[in-house]
Length: 213
Length: 162
Image 1 (cartoon, chains in turn cyan, purple):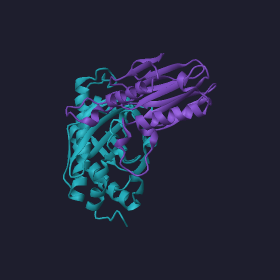
Image 2 (image 1 turned 90 degrees about the vertical axis):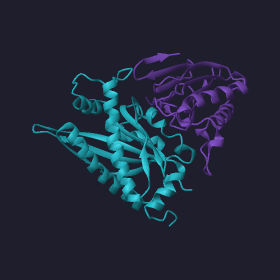
Image 3 (image 1 turned 90 degrees about the horizontal axis):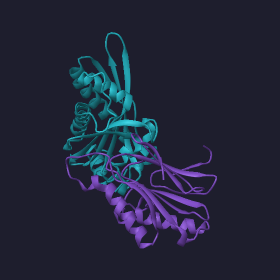
Image 4 (image 1 turned 180 degrees about the vertical axis):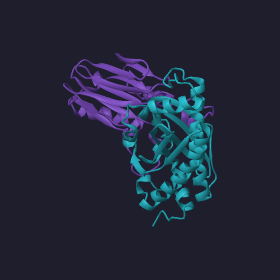
């Protein structure tokens, strides 16, 4: 069994390619929901040690909105989608048409939470179906759960399985660009893909890349 | 700011005045502080999992697990000149960050971490002076060995000192 630190650049290239296909699908779905042009891409996929994960979302204590899904099927694991709070608020306000919405309320606004879940569902579903197509692995997301809190605190909830075997996670940077006729805004979301220890070899075998090369 | 010692996830450090010691973004993880208020020496561990029997890979990070982390912390503190019999503990963390419909063991890791830490402290006869555990909020904690005060910060409830 391998640790994620032994991942090869070509593995990450494949995951990035998969990411861009998934992002394309997700962008189409989001464009339809919001009736505006949404463009998404995956500029980078990297493997980072746990203690650096939150750097990509602005630091350990940065308040973010997160959607957490468990992946079931041939290669189980955890998946997060994370956005800085103000960007998440912006997106969700547009989704549900409520300019007052603030996701950082306790308990979370019900409409807001369900829209955030749906957003996570679309994005994660698109990514997983692309990954599924590529690897011929059966990968199914479970119903999502959302929360707003410090990034590190949220991520740690998804590290339970993976942390039993190593200290690294796969981070898939995602850029969401919205354009309407007046302006264009950019959100920088991040996917964290945390395959269970036993799923790693399966995933790479399925990618037809020999892990032991 | 320069006097701040940071403890990362699955990490252990010691601090004595003028330094303070902090760990950020505790979710299901538990932050434990052991301190000797006479020697003014303190140590902190950021624990992720309850038991080192969870470890699966060859080389394991001992600071990740409640049992090994607490033993190492005590060892370091004694080496630094504290008395084992004067050590006291404060703990924080062990939250459940996501409310999941599916009832997974992994989701309950916060409460399990807390239980493991308390059990070990009890076995070692180390008094638990303060605990702020459970709930569903992330916590950042900072301990000042000069005053033995622990500062706990959450996103929605601000800062408390205990």
